[in-house]
Image (cartoon, rainbow, N blue to C red; front, side, top):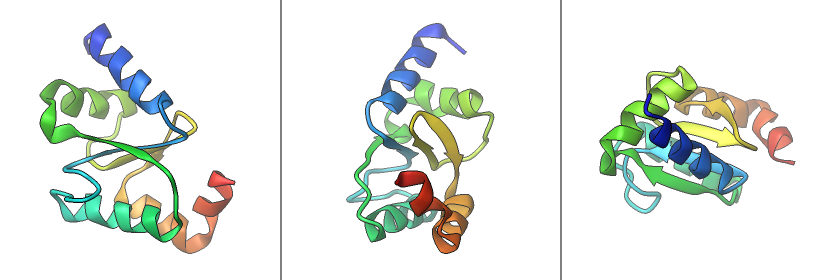
Length: 102
């Protein structure tokens, strides 16, 4: 991965405690998986920032390599990769997500 892309990804992840790489925007998700993660975050009133990977092909490909995770969305908490849609939903059900955020 290009060092400039890696730096940009790290800056995004560190810009907020909770950061989401997604397809679309929180107001208009462009895939069902992104919409489901947004629902979880909104349900718990979690403050977060997001990045629409459809707007930037370098970030879209780079984030998959950065996290070693092939799919989007990807959620980061405190600069660490937490998971994609299924993992976030399971963590929300189990209470693990709340613990991680507090």
